[in-house]
Length: 231
Image 1 (cartoon, rainbow, N blue to C red):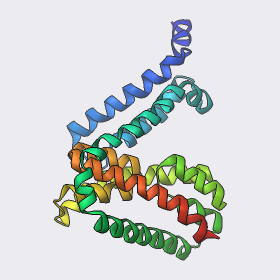
Image 2 (image 1 turned 90 degrees about the vertical axis):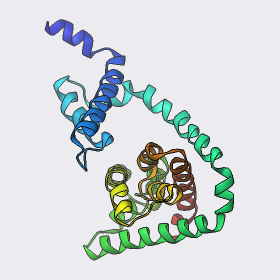
Image 3 (image 1 turned 180 degrees about the horizontal axis):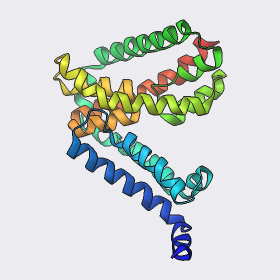
Image 4 (image 1 turned 60 degrees about the vertical axis):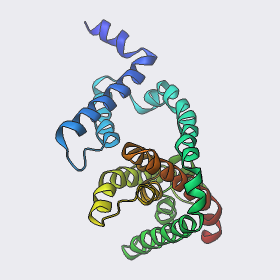
């Protein structure tokens, strides 16, 4: 039996299958529990953290064998252009409100993040790791390296931001009586990047389109402005 398990766990596609299974189980947990923090990405991550050592798989092996999933991130990101294009007419009508909301929202988020971190005594490296936390991972990690931050720490901050934003964002928007799909999508995409955009897509194509817009423009503005502010 141990030899059969070793052969099974040694298959490159085993890691992909395990990841997909963890995510499907996470979706079941979310549907059946209704817990606020039962966000599928968080639950799937915890399941994988528990399962990988039991299967004798370390992170370098997981990273190598899950390359197929990483490869699919590109087409998945490009696919966000579909809801974006479907809502292009309304986006044009709301160009100035959306632009102002992105600039103000992004600026306030950055100021509060760095201000609180500095208040609690964070050093320069931690501050520069926190600065791009609301940007999707590839951009955030590249920015952290350029700003003198710690990329691994930035990846953790990005994950926490996305998970908490997707889990708490819809409830907070409900409490604030924000009903318009465009406003909800814009808030989720700006505050919680890709995970928030995935949550917005569950609310509807209009929310998903505006979330994709906020995520894309927020990432572009961060890539342009953060190095100037840090300099």
